[in-house]
Length: 509
Image (cartoon, rainbow, N blue to C red; front, side, top):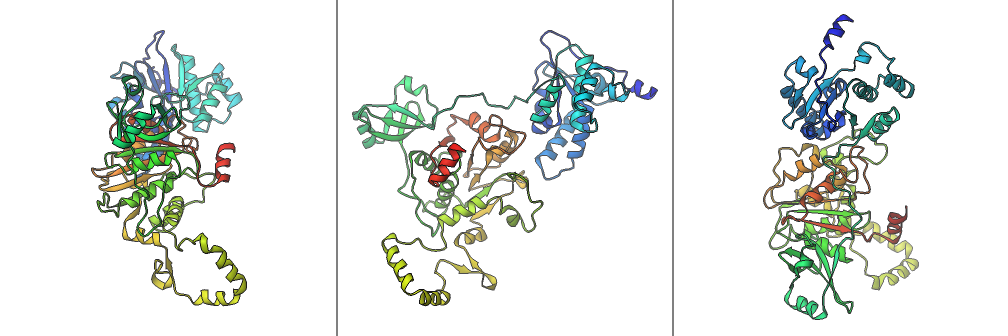
């Protein structure tokens, strides 16, 4: 016990002021942003020693972002705290604050008689859990040092437990976007009927300074005259508005034509087909066409005369809804297939195995089936395969879109292996981007080389990652930071086109 007392004799030299606070960092904050150590201005920063133990258990994860961030935090702490005295007494940070590693002396000396520890033992008696020990360390700091103490954690449950024992707690807010009111998917600009006619004939229109000051570059608009006539447009900056540049339809190689069904899908298609845009963010609830439109436009640009891209890369974070089913066997493509099944469904729509039936002759075919069921059953068994369906080894039927995957035109990307890559001349679709952290999205976007385009799609209202929310996820953060840049555009899809039932469920359930 004497050795323990001597080891804990040096006390942290925390700044004391009416404006200074002491922030206690949870493990998930450091894993979320290793540079968070430098982002608390001139306040005191305390890291419980239990956090170092949790980081030690995570640092061995070689292929995950968590493992890389844990190792990065260790390197930062090693540089800032080179010896035991600096760890216990603390050091000054470049931003004017202090950094200390804290050992809870109440637990070391088995002194559980303090008011804070008594409350903790009454509410959270199991001190073998790391979360409870981190809360206990924050309570120790609150009782022993004058500045107000705040536990910073991205775990909502830890925040609630900390407040239950009388400890202030909050989320890490540095990378959260400002809280904004609900915005419409596009703005309407009032114009006269003569201005609208001139816009239709010339293809461009100049706005006044007052109207232009409220818009950002590449924002999509709807010009409306008092007579109710409308025309979609895009703002190019410097007061200039131009017409959309979209073809009558797009189609995959050997597939069926796909046309936009509503105004917002026209906006989305215009951005997807524009060479000048390298990054697109798209918000949309289930059934609005995010996956289908982006896949159709991507494949369309791999086969036209210009052939803008060598292929399409598709990926999404591996985060399940509800309980998962454990590790999946097989190759990388086989492991990723369950997560990317929405894209296989979209490819099946774009390149159907059977040609679509002509409704003009549907009634006649039904009547024939009623009269000659037996004969048609025999014929169907002996009929040759359609020309657009091929057979693989062993006589297995290969679907049309599977040929694209086997040829490499469509690639399945695993995000855990994307670091260090340089993705050139590819159309990269990142689905469910709202499940990623801002740092993970930055890592992916910085892989995009010249001649490539990346599309981030998702629904900020559907988040399963426990460490991000509607204001701190990578999709919303990326849109907020890149808004108004000439290389970026944003579209919000609100009208469901999957079915009336899906639209009703998305709105009411």
